[in-house]
Each structure stands twice: as C-alpha cells, then as structure tokens.
Image 1 (cartoon, protein in one colour):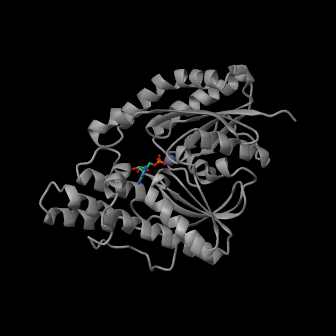
Image 2 (cartoon, rainbow, N blue to C red):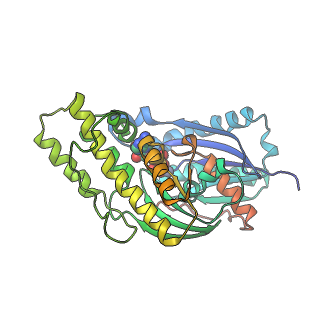
Image 3 (tube, rainbow, N blue to C red):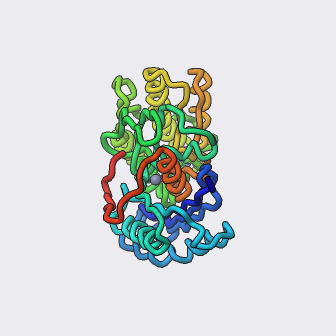
Length: 337
Ligand code: KG4
Ligand code: ZN
C-alpha cells in the first residue's frame, strides 16, 4: 500500500501549529507559530486574542507547511485536528479548518485528543510500534501517569488534584517577576543553584498512589518569597529556583518510577512541555538506570505543543484500525484521556 500523508492542525491554546506525517510515522514538516510574545504582557494566555490569531495565522501556516514539504494540498490523504482539552474558541478554529479541508479533499478526518498527542509523542523518535509502557505527561495544564497497553488502550493511574506541574512553574515564575511562561525561565535561573537552600514541600510523595498536588508547593514558595527582601536576585534567586524545581522533580520522578515498578513495565516515557526541563531529563535518566528500565523522552522539539504529535497520533490510530471521526464530532475543552 502507498504511504498515506496526514496533515494535522493543533490550536488548543496559544500555539498555532501545522504538521504533516507519513504513515510510517515520520514527520515531514512541523510548523509552530508561537503567540508567546502577544500574551506575555498579560502574564498568561488571553483566550480571545489566541483564537483571533489562530484564525489569522492558520491558513498561511498550512500553505507554508505544504510548501516546505514540497506537497500540493491534493496529495494529503488524512486530515486531523485537536478536539480538546484546551480553550474552546481556540480549538474551534483548528477543528473547523481541518473539517473544511477534509470535506474539500473528500478525505477522512481524525479528531485527536491533545493528551493522546503528548502521550504518543516519545515514539516519534523511538520509531517502531507503540509498546506497552508507563507514561508521565507533564504540561502546563496536566500532570498524569498513564499505563499504556497499546494505541487507544490507556489506563490513567494518577493525576494532579490541583495545579499541573507546568502551572506551578508558571505561577512561581510570575511571583518572581520572570517573563511568561515561567517554566523555562525558572529552569534557566536554577542552573548552578543549591537545590537544598530552601526546604520546599514534596506534597503527596509518600501517599502510596500516583496522584499529585502542587498547590501547597506554590503557596510555600509565595510565603517564602514574602519573608525575603523583594525582588530577589543573584545567588538567592538561583538557589530559590533550584530548590523549587527540585521539589517538583523529586515528586515527578519518584511517582513515575513507583508506577513503573508496580506495573512491572520495561519502558517509561515522559512528554509534555515540562519534559523540556534538563534537570528532569537528567534525574529521570539516572532513575531509569537504577531501576533498570528503558526511558524514552519526547524529543525537545515535540515536547511543548506542536501538531507533529497530532499527525502522529492520527496515523497511529488509523494503523490500529480505529475508524475516522464523523464531521459532526465536537470539540471538548475538558476532554479526558
Ligand atoms: O505541553 P505544553 O506546551 O502546553 C500544555 O499542553 O500545557 O506545556 C507548556 C508548559 C508551560 O507550563 C511551560 O512553563 C512548561 O511547559 N515548560 C517548562 C519548560 N519548558 C516548558 N517547565 C519547566 N522547565 C522547562 N524547561
Ligand atoms: Zn500540551
């Protein structure tokens, strides 16, 4: 059978993204038009601004992706879009555009869960089949541990009871007066800092389950900052960021490998925006070595929101025999895995 080409659109939050994958799961092109600069003055994503800009950016981005892949629109065999979770008005732009393309081309449409995109993204570079594994998804909106038996066969073992790990990074970045988004900024300032300078809580680390809670850590960071001379800078800022980051990573790594041990899996994966964090990558690599399990990290380029993971998920669903979505499929801002 000839290779099929899947074009995917991702507009769940503040990145407009388009990608094309072939049926082997190879990514031909992955384009992201970031709106970070636009939202930065507000310290977070403004939904109305996000959806308006998706509408403006999407068509040129599709054209750009096709041109970069040296393809004509008529050569596309499958169209996919993120159905949720995310901002309703943003999701609608990608969903309706992808459906219009599918109708115009008379090709199948796949409505994809953004979390499934993150979940399968480590396999973009791993190649080969989606093997059974235990996955940690850490993003700005979610922190989940999932047992994966195969494509479409997911068992959520635990999730956050309050803030997501990325959200905790972002909120503390804001408290520190760092630019939005806070995650990469806190990570940058943590470099060379003393991880034990501040004693931040490791909430739920011994709870015996695979759930998380990061709101206590955020509150503790706020109280600590209030006691310090503000604004903090230099070595104090570096130590604060390193200690804060370590508290999050301790819990993430501890829970992920406890889940791996309990399930007896030979493979763990980490994906989502926070998986860009170099300290998390290093700590997880050490832990995998100690636990004698394989670790597959999402490629940094496919960690934060992108459409390659959506195209990849569509291709994998099709290969697994999952039928296309109907054109009356709806978006769902609260879609669960
Ligand atoms: O997956 P993603 O792009 O969007 C969601 O689906 O939420 O994740 C974005 C999150 C943000 O909270 C951002 O601060 C965080 O990922 N992030 C990081 C790093 N890079 C991105 N957090 C910590 N360290 C990083 N290097
Ligand atoms: Zn995401």
